[in-house]
Image (cartoon, rainbow, N blue to C red; front, side, top):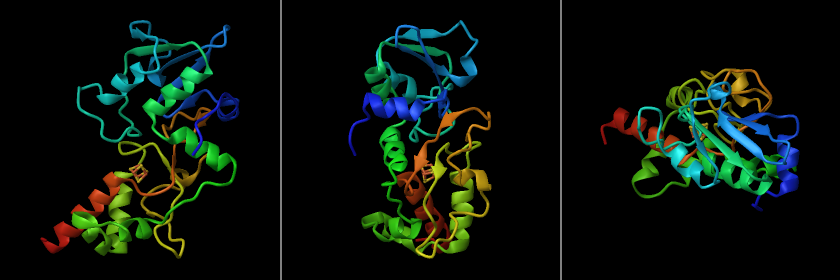
Length: 216
Ligand code: SF4
């Protein structure tokens, strides 16, 4: 995937003011100010000025717990990031939400390839090979619990359950599969965080479900 360019950013953020839990505001000098969407009117925040500062901000949640899934809806509050230009904006978004700008670029150009969960599970090896034994009923429950936007993950699911095009989980609402929907539920113009295939954390959840069933 190519690096996001200034042109790409302009396209992606055209008429959009947020990505995930991050609010993005333009400054008169072609810069950008980023903050948690809950902190738009909060002046008691710590101020940062480098794209790399996003790495630390994204590492832990409000309680100091490590965030293994960067698109989980638990981005910490209390910060503001002043960025000089679009190049810094692109790098910053990639630190907060790794790979997501490249995905939206590919999606905009109709070249985003998705992988069904069954295919993702079938290609696992070693200790994760057992995950492929998961039943459709278990997938319904695991995906419904693990990927839901309220407390699981803010990505919009584009992949199917299997080669027949089965929906990932009927326990998720239709909006979970709609890139036009703001997964935070705040109903603002947001760039979607696209999920093109089941992530390693979901694969592990599938493995755990199978192990729980079989006691292996
Ligand atoms: S599979 Fe996609 S939607 Fe589900 S938790 Fe992983 S990244 Fe999020």
